[in-house]
Image 1 (cartoon, rainbow, N blue to C red):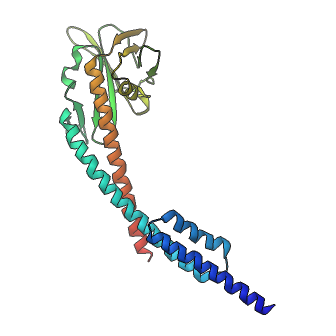
Image 2: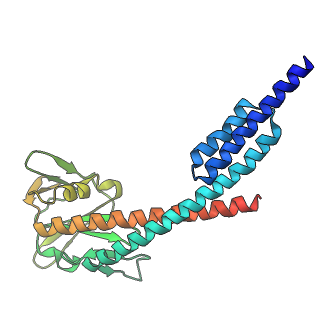
Image 3: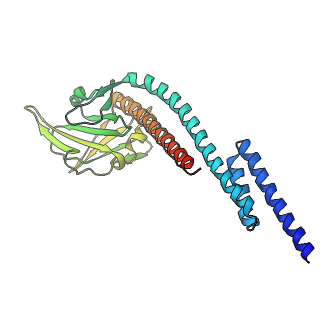
Length: 261
């Protein structure tokens, strides 16, 4: 019985070592999921193989280090590509920032600059430096007091914003000639309006101002192009911010792992 147990235990130890060796091979080959699976299997299948379990823990730390280093390399590569795209894309935008009120500025499409957008009813757009896009509806004359917008195409497909009631995002002012209503839609308030316009930018789109009553116009080609370009810029800037965050997180994890060695 003693000999049987001795052979049995030595067999288990040998098998645990095999799993550990396979984990090391997987690590060297860059197959980190397989390497972690092999290490986890040692703890499950051979709970008394303490030497291999401890070595597996040390190897797991190496795997995590390797994963984070690879992630940093990937982020650096993608950031290089995205910054090149950003440089070209920003040629179509004007940077606007009021130092007194804004920590970060906005990128305004040159095709539809904000300072001339009161000349007609419609939509205007801009993107913050951090990638947050917003759409503003501009309606001149009347007392519609709108706080929602709806965009639609001929087949009945549409997107409708959420109502905006917050002061500062929903405001009105008057000049000698007329009264203007301006409502800003961003984040959840947009509710897919910008993406809808981007998706159907080649199709005729109607724009409805919804308030005490509803007024509908045809969205101009200029507005569609401006919003589509803003949507693309917003997507790119948000991707850059995400990559920067992921890179920073991996760098922090590497420092943490090094402190535990």
